[in-house]
Image (tube, rainbow, N blue to C red; front, side):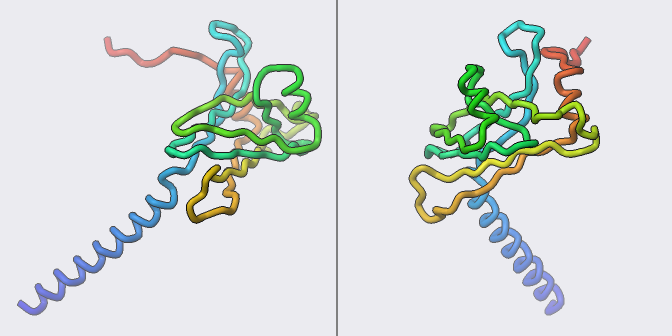
Amino acid sequence: MADLLELVKIVGSVSGICSAAFLIVDRYTKHYPAAIMVARPLIEGSVNIAHFLLLKNYSERPIIISWQHEANHLCLAKDDSTLSIVRSVMPGETVISLGPNAETYLRVIKPNGHDKIDPENSLEVQLRWRFAQPMLWKVDRTIRIGMRKRDFDEMTDKYVAGVGIRDS
């Protein structure tokens, strides 16, 4: 009987520790924004496919997102305007605000010499974000988005939209 009681205590202790660990991880990552590289037409119905970075804010508070423009890295433009694209390849920093539960698509610009990059090399961009009205944590957090050049190119070269497996 004492062995059974000890077993119950051990199981209870382990489940309590696991619950506490899950709660801490959940609270830390619950409102973490998502950044996903996607391919989509420049204009609805167009055959011109381009890369975009989908940013989603899962928080009920606005966030500030910034990134540096670096040579030989992927560049992000706020929109398709000429001015925005030119600014994205010039040295400097871009800052945007993303509202509560909002999402946006940022245009991804290929780095200079893209064709000369080895297909197995990684292309990446690093974003910094923070809550516009932080409660406790005031330091910028980092999101790093990266993928192999081969996968990056195949996203647009092999793009098929709206095709899925249908039940017959």
